[in-house]
Amino acid sequence: MRALVYDRYGTPDELRVEDVEQPGVGPGEVRVRVVASSINDWDRDLLRGEPLNRAIAPFRPRHRVLGSDVAGVVDAVAPDVVGIDPGDEVMADLSPHGFGAFAEYAVAPASAWSAVPAGLSLEQAAAVPQAAGLAVTGLRAAQPLAPGQRIAVNGAGGGVGTFAVQIAVAAGAHVSAVDAAWKLDALRALGAHRVVDYATEDFTSTPGAYDAIVEISAHRRARDYHRALAGGGVCSVLGGQKRPMLSAVTTGSVLSALGDRRVHMPMWRANDRRDLAYLRPLLESGAVAPVIDSVVDLDDVPDAFRRLVAQQHVGKIVVRL
Image 1 (spheres, rainbow, N blue to C red):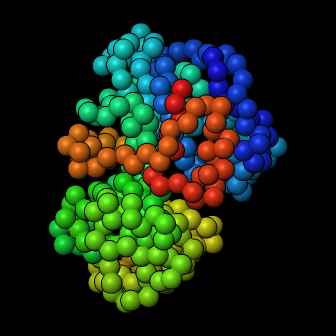
Image 2 (image 1 turned 90 degrees about the horizontal axis):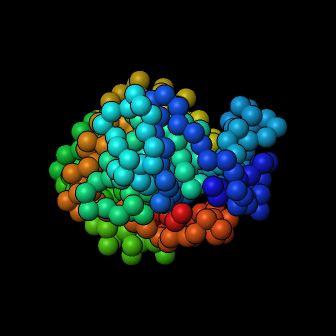
C-alpha cells in the first residue's frame, strides 16, 4: 500500500510516499481502507521531534507513518469483534494506537472506531476526531456550557478553534474569537459575536471579561488568563508554546487554589464516547460543521505541512487517499 513515511526528525522535506506492507488484523482489531485523513499539530510535533518525542525516541521516530485523524470504510474485522462490519463507514483518532493515518489502510482496536455521523462525507469526518474532541474537552472540562456565558477562544481560526467557536455558539454563549486579522471574517461567519485581532488587542487585558477561555495557542502567563476570568471562570489551555503551557500547570495550579477562578490543562482522551455523544447531534443537525481549508492528495502533504506550520490555513487541511 502507499503511505507517507519519514525516517528522521526534521522538516516536511523528510516526508516521502513509499510502498509499505499492508497491516494485518490482530485480535480485537479492525482494518479500514482510508478514504481521508487530516493534519494536526501533533503530526507537526512528531515530524519535528519536539522535546517530548525525542525524550521517548531520541534517535529516530517511533512512528514511521504520521496521521491521527482517519475516516474510511471497514475492510476487515477480527473474529472476536462485534458491532462493526466490513463496509461500515467509520472514523477514529489513531494517536493512542501508533498513528498511521497517512496510508491507504489503517488498523486500530475496535474500541477506537465510531460510525461517521449521518450527513457527513468521509472527507468531512476526517476533520472531526482530534480537533472536535479537544474543543469539547476545552469547553466542558470544568463546567457545563450554558446560554449567556461569555467565552473567549484564542487560536479560533485553526481546527480546534473553529469547532470550539461553533460548539459554544450552538450552546447560546457569547463568543469572542481571537486570531490573525485575515481570519476574522471567517470567524464571524461561524457565528462569533466578537472578533479580536491578536496583533492589535490583548484579549486578556480586561479583568473579569470571560466566564471561560479556551486557549489553543498559549503564549501568555497563567496570571494573565486568571485576571481575565470572572468569578467561577475557567481557562482551559489546550496547546501553544511550551513555557506558557508549563505556566498553566504550575502557576495556574497555585492561582486556582487561591480562589474560584481556575487555569488548567484539562485531561483529554482520544475517541472519548462521552465527547462523541455530545458532538454527534450537533454534527448531524448541522449546528456544527467541519471547516475544511483545503483537500490535498498524499503527494502534496509536505506542502500542506508547510502551510500548517506557517499558520496559513483556516480550519482543517484534509488529506484525500
